Length: 187
Image (cartoon, rainbow, N blue to C red; front, side, top):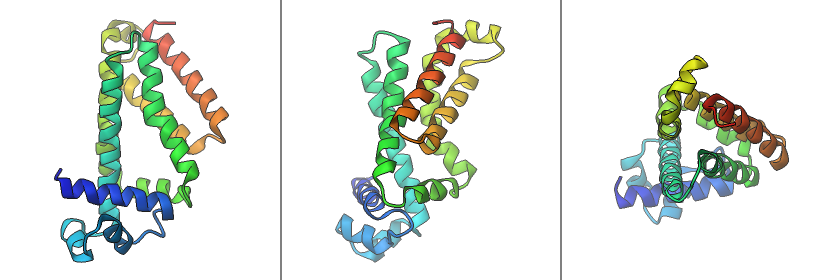
């Protein structure tokens, strides 16, 4: 991704955060990025394309942050906590502060299964790698690192939109973590 594209997407993220996805316009994004609308349209055909690319950039940044933080984590429990904080809790906090945050979810899910899968895959792969050393324990329970990673990510990700508040989110994530630790043979 070019420096210009990153600048555009960072501007889009800021605009979506301030106005909400529905109310944000391509003109708002271009203005925030310090570029003309034709320059923006030369790279992105519409707001949906900008949003999909922005979601991918956010996801890539989360994967990088988690990967860096895992280097100093001593246990799988710590690594799960780091992942949940970076990928779930922070996003939950952000969307709760956004105007019309529910339209972010609707717009994201309207992007289509392939676009969603692409955004999510980096995080699922990260978790599958984390669970890899527990392949045998998972096989005994009829699972695999990949299946557990997909389940863990889908569950925790859905909590961002279904939790009533921060305490409820924390409770849901703690239960998911405990179940995962049991599956891994770490509880």
